[in-house]
Length: 126
Length: 189
Image 1 (tube, rainbow over the protein chains, first blue to last red):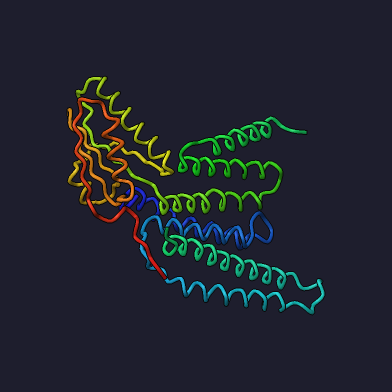
Image 2: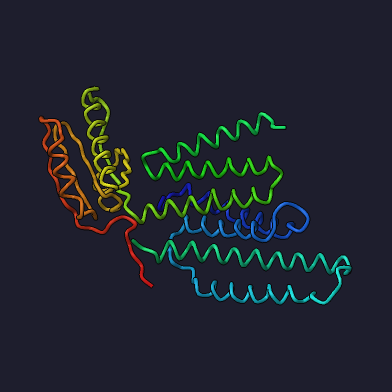
């Protein structure tokens, strides 16, 4: 698997498509199949493919950990934003709010799964 | 009402689950588990649960398969390179070689290791430079040369086993190359 030009070329072509598909699943999750969790898992698989191409330790997990915490806080705050309102909010507000929450969940899940993966690959040894 | 597609899916799922449990090699078992997950996600799809199907396909098929394979690599997969030039050899010798490889694999499996045999006709010097083998078996006419690398804890047993089980007319020479194991770098936080 190391330094195989076939794997490298295929992955380079594949990674943008995976990311676009993940974002599509996240953003379109409000009214079709998918949602934050599924899209986030798809985004995390892009990182796994990236690891297959270049298995170097050049991703700083600490930033990802920090980003995950901040995103969790943002998720709570976004949830509380519309707390006092009645359910009869304007259409656009609801849409924007839903997409925003889905995006936050998606990026948070992608960060979390990537952290799990990279930690397992690089730090856990026999 | 149950359609024929569902019946086929269910039968395939049961067969795959059975194969997954019954396979001898862990590595193949992990791959079968991935196929099982993929069929499982089709089954979810046929029950009108596409959300669950996507999650199952991504997590069961990609994430967990790769994690299992990496875990096996970190545990003890033993990579055996078998260097030979098959051209022009009589069938009896080929059969002998195959038997030797198979019995060596069975020996390692009994010890709880995970053998992975690769037949190659690459130059042995190139392989030595890449350091990607645990056992390198070179077979020329009546001579077997074996290099072992990074498996010092089992190399004497392997040598003993091969000397004990080889066909009598073969000469075996065994060398230990003390280099680091493939993929065996350990990181500590």
